[in-house]
Length: 110
Image (cartoon, rainbow, N blue to C red):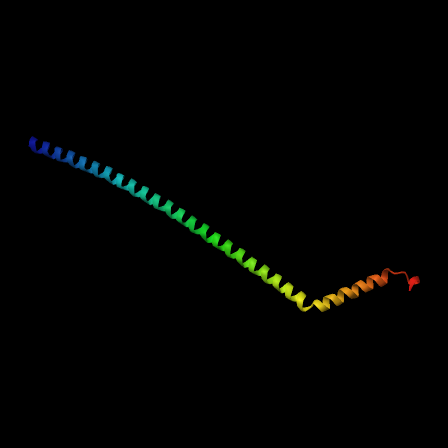
C-alpha cells in the first residue's frame, strides 16, 4: 500500500512539474506573441504615417501646380483683356489726362 501511495505521490509531482513547465511555456509563447503583435502594430503605424506623409506631399504638389496654372491663366487673361481693350484703355487715359489738364489750367489763360 505504501508503494502505491509513493507512486501516486510521485505521479502527482510529475504532473505538477509538467503543469509548471506548460505554464512557463504558455507564458513564454504569450510574451513572444505580444512582442510580435507590438512590432507589427508599430510597423503598421509607421507605414500609415509614411502613407499620410506621401499623400500630403502629393496634395501639396497638386495644389501648387493648380495655383501656378490658375496664376498663368489669369495672367494670360489679363494680357488678352489689355490687348482686346487697348484702344478703349488708351481713349480713357487720354480723356482723363485731358480732364486733369483742363482742370489744372486757370480760366484766365483760355
